[in-house]
Image: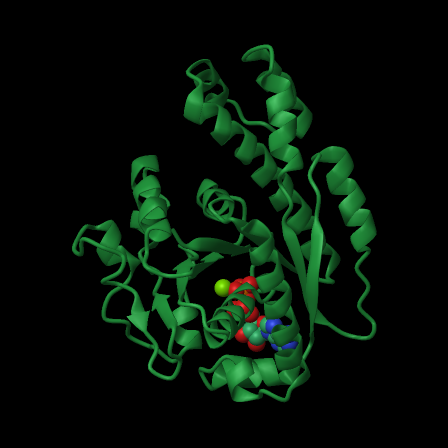
Amino acid sequence: MAVVVSVASGKGGVGKSVVASNLALLLARRGKQVVLADLDVGGANLHILFGLLHPPLTLSDFLAKRVETLDAVAQPIEAHPGLRLLPGTGDTLATANMPFAKKKRLIRHLKDLPADIIVVDVGAGTSYHALDFFLMGDVHLAVATADPTSVLDLYRFIKLAAIRRVLSAFLARDEIAEVLSDRDFASVEEVLEAAGKTGEAGQAQAEDLLKGFRPCLILNRMSGRSRVNTLQLKNLLQSYVGGDLAMLGEIPEDEAVEQSVRRYLPVVDHAPASPAAAAFNRLADALLLELRGLA
Ligand SMILES: Nc1ncnc2c1ncn2[C@@H]1O[C@H](COP(=O)(O)OP(=O)(O)O)[C@@H](O)[C@H]1O
Ligand SMILES: [Mg+2]
């Protein structure tokens, strides 16, 4: 089964797709078979970043069962051997109503794709889709900029993802926990308390699930003046969520990135000597180390 790397952010426009596309390309260049999947259901645009303006098939074709397999939708990218793209869907209506069974089917098929690594671009925001696609990852990458609203949105996103991680695990195996699904949990404490009511070991199991949750932070668009108090964010997550946050790396603000987007090329391809491309290469190495740690 392929290893899944999910890429999310609390807020849109922080560079999630730029990060996902450049990392996917670099992993392919390092000899991996990579599929880059665009699961940003509202704002799918990864195909544009690769200059694929009219993809012949998209996820919509799979969701509507016009094609049997995701493998048929995954589009090889001529210039980049080892990399295939699963174009997202512009079909907001169909996907916004995607029932749970359909989402399960999609996730199962994604993991079964013949590839070493699936990089998933998860939509921004805290919809159940975004949370579930993020949680599908074996490695969770969270992108933020130094903008305080971006950091706050990221914190909220990780907190809700942690809550969803616990609830999904309980729902999957415990019928009593079904009653929990109707409740809207705002804090991790409430979830722990509810988990405790499902049985003796409930609370301890929930705590273990939280402890095992360790998203990796990527800071994008950093400049000499940017400051992000990562220690404070880490402490906040430890005290209020019970999970940990790892720092994976930083990408500088670099006009080469904007130029590359306009040229429909990943920046590591368009401007390999740029500061952003160098940072992406370091990030890809750090990610490969994380992936090795999984094995
Ligand atoms: N490191 C960077 N330096 C300069 N501009 C960037 C950088 N990262 C992203 N951008 C700009 O931000 C825009 C939005 O990035 P994108 O990846 O599409 O955001 P998201 O997927 O999070 O909505 C890009 O088109 C690019 O112009
Ligand atoms: Mg995007």
